Length: 223
Image (cartoon, rainbow, N blue to C red):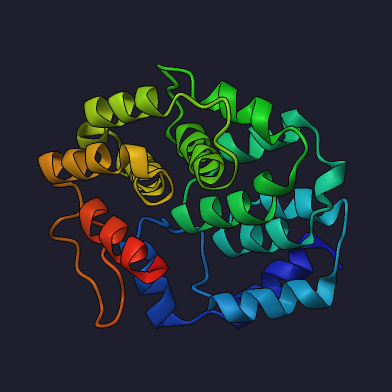
């Protein structure tokens, strides 16, 4: 199957309500508004395709890029491939799938994390990926991380960070508070002081992304 065929099929799956949702979330015009479940079904049918993923990514189309993250063979990607994908991302949903299904499974993720976490990183999508990978390390294997230093950076940068970066930086703050009791009070204090996401609309039964609320709820569930 060629990229043009995949795009044609994605177009037939387009949904006006989903397009409106994506546009509101910052997706831009290069999208069809395909439901994520339908994207997954198409990718499952395509299976892993070493060359097709690149063609799909280079279209810039939101759904084509989502498919690409699911059909790429992660072990075949170079650090340069990953850098290109991250730095040319234009939509948060694509960034999140790229992080979950590709970056976090790649053997070079720690080197890339360190690169993208350097102060002054100008590409907001690279910075978003760096904080996402750091949040994962905070939760799973924080040995060697300077958690106090991360909290200082978050305190100084979270409130004014680009929205794309703010989301994963906040996730890092939350993970420090949840998984590292010795830093919990500091994490809660920073969250309260900055107030980021304090008024974020949340559906009934869902946890607020406001750091103090999120931390306290997860700690409560841990018993």
